[in-house]
Length: 173
Image 1 (tube, rainbow, N blue to C red):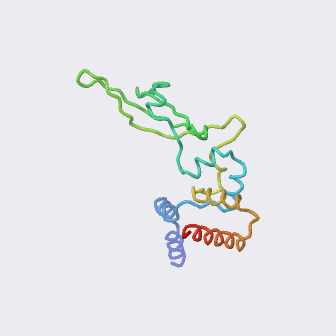
Image 2: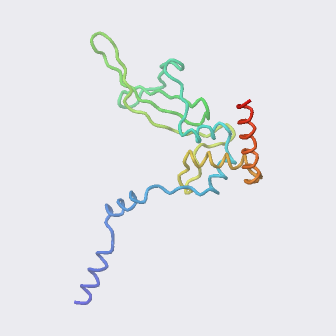
Image 3: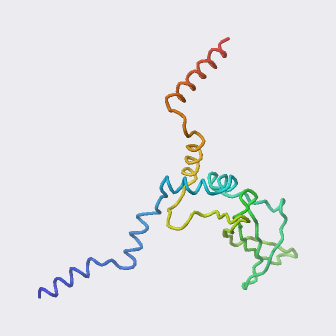
């Protein structure tokens, strides 16, 4: 009987696949460390930093780029590819459906996804796997910290207070 009880206890401590997935969802994504973000920021171009700090890419509008399809997929959907005008590493792949309605041909975007390509100098947009998720705020904090590196916080505060007093006096005059 002792064997049956110990076996039951061991079986109840094993999570099911669904239980493991629920535990992962509750944990969320792993945030990248400040050191990993700093390393990433040091290794990419200003254009990549702009997209990462903004949190989105700049793709041309239909009026800017036109509506040119690159191919047709196996389902008969028209494929359109747009390259980010800022970083040049992100490609938005859009799937469009065409249909004839009331004597007119109408097009509707039915899906879109992002693909990332490697730049001419081997630059990549995504951080190395296993580093965690880098938020736009973390990227901005890293850039600001590098720009202000070597400055004394006390001196920075004194300078800003002196400038504020000077501006207030100038405003009164």
